[in-house]
Image (tube, rainbow, N blue to C red; front, side, top):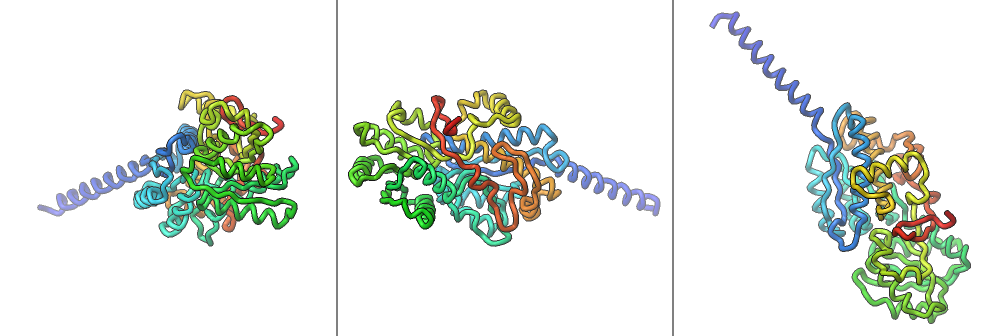
Length: 395
């Protein structure tokens, strides 16, 4: 073969390899960016995971309609059920961490699961985004920290609940707590509050998840002259407590001031008509009932378009709103990082400037030393409306 044909062959091979590289590069630019979600889809009567998923999907739909991230890559969700079991959550997180296209993982609402995932996130350098779990310790890791939360903390929730109790003149409290990390976190928050509010006294009543008869504990609280119940509970146990309090004479029914776990299900439906018989207030960070902004109206239309339901039918609204805002923040961080490299995106999350979200307008939501996007000011007390959602007291 003469030199001309040798040069021609080399040129053809080079051109072919260049074409393959160009095709691979183009394919890479079109490959979806994946967000993982490990949440309690399989827990009976719980709809919190589904609400978190909807929040992510509505935000994704908006982002993808505007061209996605990184100049054209679409966002895609990979949602997996952990049934609220820490071991299942760990398995899901392990699987997500070895998939190159997964840039971050959302957790569900149960603090015991998220607490287990947090050290794994830092070990594997995988972003863990928390739209519900409230245990204080979840984000308390040194730099570089891969855990970012947009939710309440138990300390803030307890402050809001006890401030509300004092406003109503309740100073002798029955503290109902689950024997879980969430219960321990809430108890610590209560004790911290007492250090500066010496007029608050309490008796603690601990219960196990799955417990069904609370009558003896309720009666002990009544007989002890306690004035109100501060309840830390999910909807399963909370439903039974409401029903069993409603069995008492009206003068014996202690008011209940509740953490937001009970909003993880359709609580009005689950209590089967007994809720109006009990004085119940619940702490929240967001409700569409008092969200009148143009963004809230646009998001409500997105919910109806994607899922065929009116926003009044959407329960566990804090999970939706928190996940919605976190997804938009993640997209901003990916674009700021200029890649899906997890470490680069983590750094970009700490450098976000402003974002006008659904829950609030954020100004530098995260820093190197503070991975909490919300603060105490977002918390308020509310009551359930006829649709099963929370309406802020006074509105």
